[in-house]
Image 1 (tube, rainbow, N blue to C red):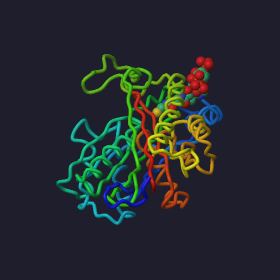
Image 2 (cartoon, protein in one colour):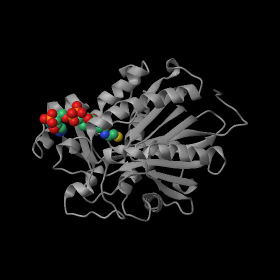
Image 3 (cartoon, protein in one colour):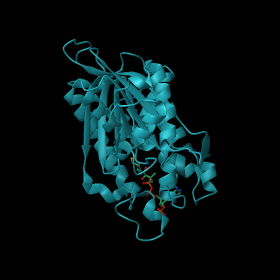
Image 4 (tube, helix red, strand yellow):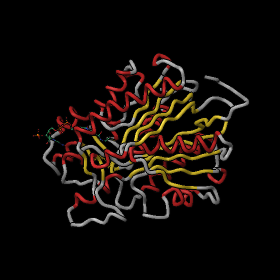
Length: 329
Ligand code: COA
């Protein structure tokens, strides 16, 4: 694993940003909407509260706030970006892409801008795509955002799902560098699990009834849980082996924030303690593609993650999709 290699181009994280909508919905608030209780939610998921967008806020609004902070930290002007990638499952419109709407808000013109849809693995997919552009010299300054207004596709009468999700956005600015940054990314999918976690209808598969369940998230939680734990353990091993390192070399696990029990199972497998695992699920709930960059941003900004440290990012989501990134920060 080289630290600095003039013959090689790396993508280096130059800045991070995050944004959470102002409105906080606690578990106690949910008790008033569905038959649930604070203790059940805490025990099964680790979630205590989530942020919910205002009616007027769209995914690109959230993405914009996170992007501005990442650009500021990186000291990069929006007009100098030569690629914008937005990972989202909840785009503002069917088209144009949320990435081009964000581009307009940022004042960038001409850079390629597109969305990536891999549900909760979206940010890791976006990072992987952006990394290929940088490594091949196609782009030098890239904005990658994970942003979601999941509250818009949540069935607020279904206690099996509505307690689990929240809204938010996280962003990174990548810069081309001869110093090590993203060391490897690993992305996968297996479409046979479509029906375990999905929204049954969409623009092409039109809803056949007025039932709200057709237009919101449906999940077989128990089955998703089992596959998630096994898959995340496999992707961690795959990443370590590909880089010829051991779990002892890792400084931080920055996992997808779906459920504290899933996070703890992955951390245990990697022998990483609570002091090496970034946890935001208690305050953010599952923000899908925003969850990993939000967690990363939080630990970078509060000084836990330091330059030169080795980070393992991982995620799992609908599809199923899953992925990881090993990063020298
Ligand atoms: N409040 C109170 N009770 C609830 C509830 C809620 N919000 N949601 C479900 N229950 C009930 C169920 O109805 C069930 O009752 P029953 O035994 O009388 O039928 C009971 O709690 C247990 O349900 P079960 O689904 O077996 O619980 P679980 O331990 O698997 O926990 C999840 C449920 C959803 C928290 C868990 O399966 C999970 O986190 N799965 C993964 C979800 C995920 O990460 N998705 C995103 C992946 S990106």
